[in-house]
Image 1 (cartoon, rainbow, N blue to C red):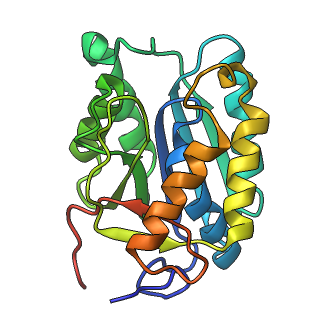
Image 2 (image 1 turned 135 degrees about the vertical axis):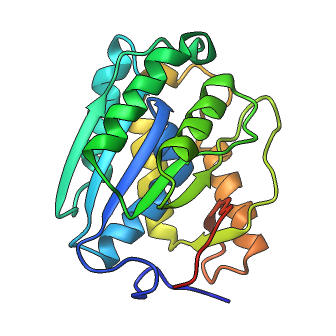
Length: 219
């Protein structure tokens, strides 16, 4: 079955979307194209964008990039927190309190977060806390390509027009200058993932983003 992002069954008018990322650039890499398309088709959607760790120059990069991707949202709130990257599991109490505060302050209709089987320890804990906190929301887990080779078999695909993919990739490369020396941080990496998922869902453009949807409830 194909469910369009514009269908009422996907998001109702005035919905709230929560985007969670352990680090600066995680949200953009994992679901940036889907967010661009979603906001084009649902201009009345409000977005809460939460980055849990972005030290130094990464904080400014995270804020600038989020503002670019959230163009077109009815309202947008961007939060960049100060948790220590790479140490999330060893500072679990502080992370849990952050999620408790978030869960008490908003009740989103849709949550984008990390994948439970992601081998990066920070990503994995964010996913666990997402499911612990948001028990009555639709949660879609995005994927991050990296050295660990932990990409799985997603079960939900969002086809994307090529120009949307170009906006995603070019914005990531432009806004996150601190990452340009990393061997994985290249246009080829991001385009390859989009192309692979496009092949797997027969996307008309040939490109797509993919997610893991663990629990779907039909009203």
